[in-house]
Image (cartoon, rainbow, N blue to C red; front, side, top):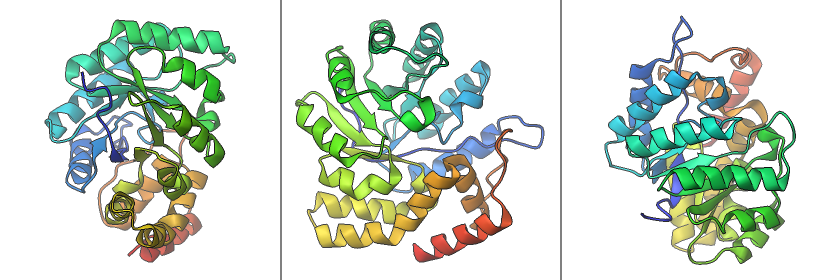
Length: 293
């Protein structure tokens, strides 16, 4: 088992829907192929960008299989398997492992606020059920749960929990987490506006939907970091910073869907209750995309 199979830019595809509110698998494969050949270092379906909470079990399975088939070993694949119950999370983690995923990502989802012990037992149970690495995902804005650095350090004591994706947007926490990590674990940034600061803090990778729209700029930032060219990294980040902030403010699926449309690329529809960007928001997005050119 490769305990840390990801580095660099990890691209998140959207899940497109047709006019009958069905997952459009042929279009998904086409959009996915764009990401594979864009220069990304990994692919991560079924995250926030892929509207995982809005999908039915059979849709998740179909998207998982389609991803692994389309990528066909060219890049490592990180499958989101987060669910409210431990049993459902285990089911989808096992499905992803069988399909060929390099790792799975788990966000603790909850209606009732979970205790640290409940979160720990949740990850422990999934880890015991599979043999591939797990990325523990902290995103208070979407889950309503904020896993403290102490809890994340405890999760790393579970054998195959080897990666942390931190999306709180707190750079001080990124530095603290990086100090806690040993050689067998890695930190990833999930907050787009924090991309440069997170890399500077030692993040191994950037989990982002941005490569759907501006892959060249995303890759340029990572390459500048790898070459320790901080001036070029700052310039690259500044060029795309407005777009990255807009994506977070307006919602990843909405912005990616609209941005692809503005670029003349079929992007399907959104699943309600999500609605497309307004005309004014699309105009703003158009200007932000031009700024990245």
